[in-house]
Amino acid sequence: MLLNPAVVPQRDLSRYLGEQPLWHGDGSITVLPRHLDELRALAVESITRPERYYLIAATGDEVLDYRTMLDHYPGVRTTLIQGGDHAISDFPAHLADVLAFCDQASPPLVAPAAA
Image 1: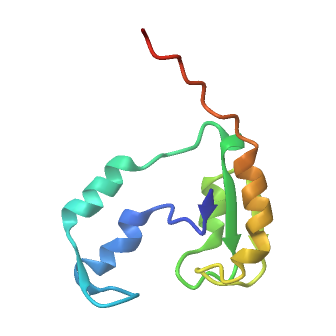
Image 2 (image 1 turned 90 degrees about the vertical axis):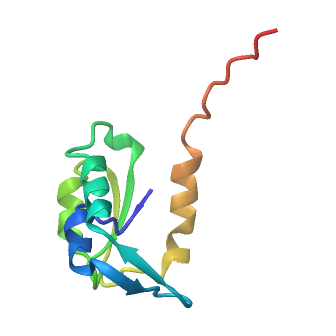
């Protein structure tokens, strides 16, 4: 389930190095260069099983460019919200689709415990 995902977070967060106030609540967080390195190490160049993904992207995202999301996740189930915002403020309107997508996955097989 991808909701307006940051496709290249190490690039997007590079302008926020140092101490940053929390957006919700009191306090702060410190973004260090090593955090960007950790994100870079986790980067996935391209997905291999598009059927496992569901992307909801908003053309009105004020933080990230939705076209980058579409380019990075070709062939995945996609809901493209015309307008909207980064928070996907109308998420309740998409909840039934999200739950249906999540429910279609087969549960993992669990091997019986050895006696």
